[in-house]
Length: 324
Figure 1: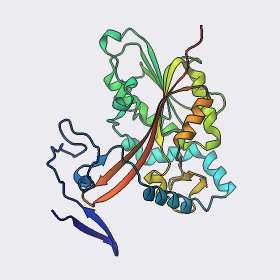
Figure 2: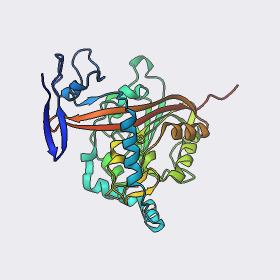
Figure 3: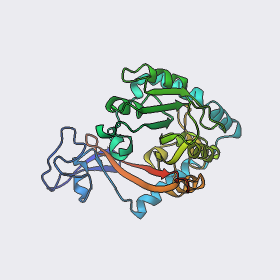
Figure 4: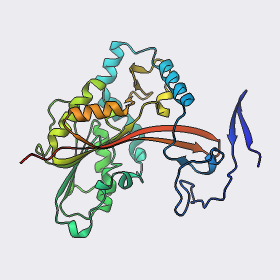
């Protein structure tokens, strides 16, 4: 069948394609029904579903992304502007959560799939105590699902955030359980952390879209402290923005603080990583790599026939066991 084209701007066309096979669709078309996966093997089927996984970029697309970043990062903010955004980061995050309140809460359906270590432990293992600490817990996108689904009697969860407003919102949620969870305000970029637990005590430390909000010169110190507070054999689980993600390409000129580090319209900051940077920093902290994945995903707006390329990086690094 002949493809149909929709004109969006003069001289530019988006292609609306018809599938060449019969799919079993789920209700919201998040993925094929049954045993189907989201691997795009035929470009004509791109608008059959809302997203496709593991999408490889060709040389032309990579070059276009590099050109877009070069253009939006040519002009850097002044030292005074950079100092303002960095020193006032907690204020900007307070303002963000003050505006969005708990509407920023997103049910991370992928949480236990990508990080099964966070999933509830089966009943026959309930006697095993474990402790989880989330840096940058926000309004509970990670903590609340764990509390909701876990029945572990010896589970202890800790969370901290820049924003006092985020912590206030999290504590007010019906799923929050202060008997199993303690959350507090903390600036993770401080050299010494003021936390309610000892060094070498955490089974898991979680950082999801957090390190990117910190100025690059302070990132290594944050990861060094993660190493300090993980118990030997403990796991640091990480997910954040990758280089050339759609969010990076969309920045306008004049929003760049330093290379690959930008300020959003609301004053919050964001960095876009490469896998080499993350491997280097976490290895330098003393952690051992178990997983490092670049997740290139194609999200589509089927109604408007728009393609949006996302790039995230997910890692798992473990603190070595003590040598006997």
